Length: 452
Image (cartoon, rainbow, N blue to C red):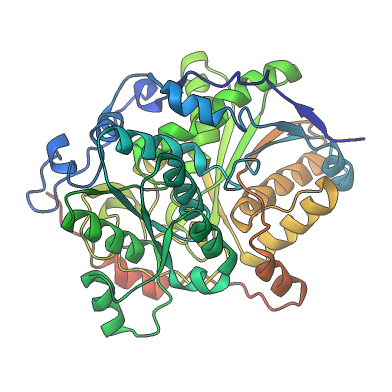
């Protein structure tokens, strides 16, 4: 009962990204200018983003071509394998057929490189001299640092302080490739100094790190900002994952009943889920799509669907999303890549349309699932990816109890080789489950901007 691997021919990767917006029955709400409350124009985004990325952000075309230069580098590790997890199935005693798409084979060890590469490429083409960004657990900062090294552009990465301290090897990886890694909040920006003045021991958050990175881009004409999740163009680049999956399921002569992805900002979830949602919308295929998030930072399951800032310092445009409030600082859980107050507007929108469902899981359940998967399949998942593993195991157990041989697919979006401190704490019984901080979130939501 061995694991089975489904591989596409070498270099046979998608030639175009898939844009879900083209198939939606209702268009998503537009981003708004925080000053005027009016829909943003492309020109208003140009101080922050490369022009081609702005065009992708607002596009309604179903397919957007992947540049040859980008495909050439993607082909170093893509197509990534789709595995049938027979050993996990046996361990669970389930009649379900479990598949996982493994994104840990990329240079940075996660799915993040799928968007880091094109974002840096388009900035290089347009003459950007420096790139700035934020990172949580460090997967995005690592990916962007490697991509910037490939294209010869300096990179500044504001890393959430708690992760900066928990994951020193991620910092080392970024610096190996020339990235400058800065603990956030920092004293190097107005946004960082304001946070530290109010709370010198602030553990940081993705919202704070975004504020710092955007501030640097706005103050330097030769610098642009790149984002690792949330926005449409980022989710677009990740669809290579699901597009490959569709073809790999043809090889397996199978098709998923349930598609699962972890969610923090929404990029890896969108990458695997959006092409399957498109199949459901165009061809009426019945597939349950499940988003899984941390119980301590539950934007989809507990957040309000409203216009909010994407950062704590309120420098970004207003986007309509499921949010816990831009001033909310999540507890210091070890899934640093999911510690974000909001959810991608497009992921939020498809939940509002009833096209996906969401659930939250606690930290100890996440690590327990990661260890169970590792012992069966031989791959140690990143804590973020273990949210999807946990939900997949729950669904497989339900199949066992109901005698239902359903097909389950989840995105194993990265390996956990840089997360061993967290796994050691779990093994020692030192991880705690943070509950939903209702009072703190209520306070943050009270500060939502008023939009007419």
